[in-house]
Image (cartoon, rainbow, N blue to C red; front, side):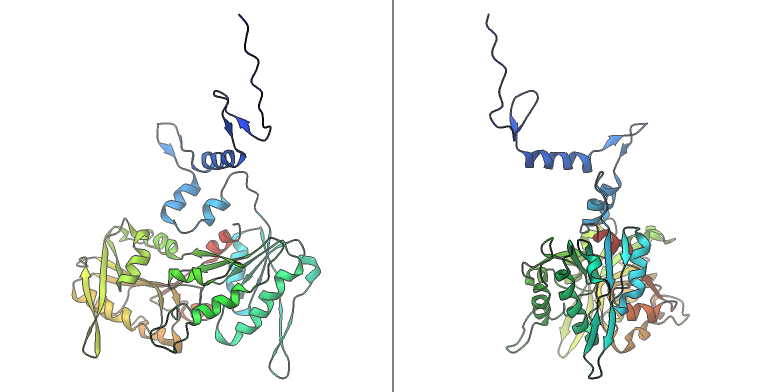
Amino acid sequence: MATAPPFQNPNPNLKLHRSRHLPIPRRTRLAIRMDSTSLHVAPEKGGAPRVPAAVQRSASHSVMASASVASLPGRSRKNVLLFYCEEMRELAERVAHESDAIELRNISWGVFEDGFPNLFIPNAHGIRGQHVAFLASFTPPVIFEQISVIYALPRLFISSFTLILPFFPTGTSERMEDEGDVATAYTLARILSNIPLSKGGPTSLVIFDIHALQERFYFGDNVTPFQDSGIPLLVNRLQQLADSDNISIAFPDDGAWKRFHKHFQHFPLIICIKVREGDQRFVRLKEGDPKGRHVVIVDDLVQSGGTLIECQKLLAAHGAAKISAYVTHGIFPNKSWKRFQYDNGVGPEKGLSYFWITDSCPLTAKEVRQKPPFEVLSLASAIADSLQI
């Protein structure tokens, strides 16, 4: 009986499945390889499954792709040169401390006699072919200087460029309510969208807890926005508290609930709403029971703090045992953070037990450190991870 000739692969670029001679395209093989590498769960002794660190972190940090990307086996960490504005010096030093792959670089922020900036990037030739990042803080007096440097860096033949803007300052002005209103969130997005391309292509733009998620679509194709979050820092801090099993999460309005409730699936949730009665606005309890609980109010930012104070009073009136608050961005214009200073009182009606903010607004973070009830949760580790994407 004649034997069939061996199968000849008509396309050498396609790999054949061992058992069925089915061609598998290279792109599919890469996807399969990445899936099996990053998500494989192997049992340990005793039958308990071992979950990789990247998967564990993604479960509690679903919006931060940086951890899983940076943790992929076989992926070499890239060396990054990190420039920064003067306001962000302390945070930049913390970021560099998180990773040996990050090297700080300085910029000369001089000023001419007429008040316009006199800027200089030292050793510009030495950054050619390197991965470069800039840590920005767009407080009003120093936006122009930083934009000038941000536009200059990609033109120095660098391999890639990442802009870390922890706080997007015009995020609350994202729409028009009356004819003539200017949506400055769109204006700033257009400015950043004109950052020149580097050798590696569009700029990676890292922003933490932008006020309105739809603002990511305000940017053009010259930048790739990456939405990061400070919420995992809060979750980790809550797990360290002695009463971690008695914590409920409260949201001051429906918007905050829609934005953040998926991060707190293992906590009882409380929702407040703002209602208008005549010319006055009040906070009312919509859902949940704060009685006897340590309630933590969560939002993306705080300005004067009026809404948080009203929410705190409402929760106290409904029997909360303790009340704390968290915002990613502590803006606090005109030092309004002083309204929350700890007064040594006892009970939630006297004030907040904790007020957590991040160092996304560095001047505020510096002012409130060591001033109870404030605690500053640093974004340094999250930023270091994002630089490995």
